[in-house]
Image 1 (cartoon, rainbow, N blue to C red):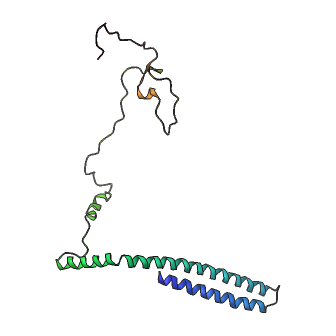
Image 2 (cartoon, rainbow, N blue to C red):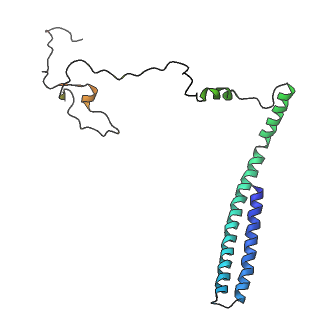
Image 3 (cartoon, one colour):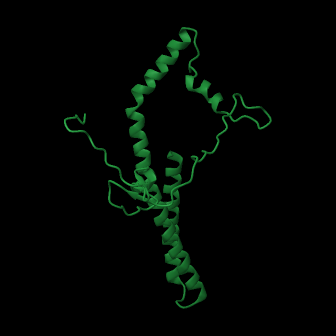
Length: 183
């Protein structure tokens, strides 16, 4: 990051110097000639590039400052990490222990198509239709006819939930004898 910042600042300074020199040369040339037009174009290009690299240097400076602040803030954590590594080595263990998740990564490795699967796969069968004729029309006995909702959301219509009966089926009332409890 520091190298990029230095290079951007050097490029911005170089293009700014070129723009100043080429502007002075442009003033010496006769206006309206091809050389004057070319020198003027080169001057504007150098001024543009000087601005681009100046802005890049500003952005890189902000990034470099943020990285330096992070480095300063994390200094105690890095020191603890180094001391913990030294203690592991002193105890005869590796400095950087392998995390347990690395062992589990082998489980995620794809198998080649020539190898048989490790466990049998379950075959899914389509649902079988219920025996008997399907009713042709439905009418909800307890709810008024609902509008169908969109396919993407909302509640399904009552006939899809099995809350409706066939139209031809008569509604039966259950009569309780006098004095009998309903519950």
